[in-house]
Image (cartoon, rainbow, N blue to C red; front, side, top):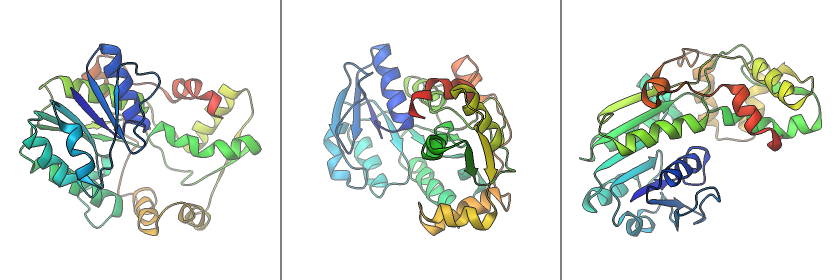
Length: 275
């Protein structure tokens, strides 16, 4: 049995589907206790990673664990996993963990999560992806209202990755010892500007969308309306101060899965109905 936490999230849902399609016994843990409809045979269970006592029973009979990072019960869940006989843990971290900047709110919680895994006594693999292509879903409301799409950090290239590709790497790492003890940095196949992604979305939707770059002041106001200030400060550190470079394209997805990662155009075509 493989336990997937965050089973209704961008990566978790893809991973549950992939495991189910292979016929692997998979237990899908989420706060809602639901599993994706595209994963027949998956066992859906409810649990909260901030409350490890709600996860404990879900570890029974589990040989491998896919663990989300940054939750309060993390260390206790890892200890419970070891006690339950789990033999492998794959954690979803992020590229900023590699900066070593514990003072950055985002990098800091990822670094803490990775430390917990390394100290757990379990064989581990860490996944450090760049920004997700699915972040483009934040533009849905704007695109439904008009053709001008306001974007923060307009001059920053990032090699965003499709959550599908993260899940495919996780799948391999869960089923094999080949990547034990490694932190895998994952990227998409191309570095794009926000305006490039808006243009691609327009092409897929048959519209002439155009990006309007926000000033730093405008971006801060909009971002702070939707997330805590320390996280906004973290992203300004990454993309304004330049402490994180997500523009470099790496071959990791190809090396692990045997195929090239999906392009943003492929992601957009697969999610066009959302817009």
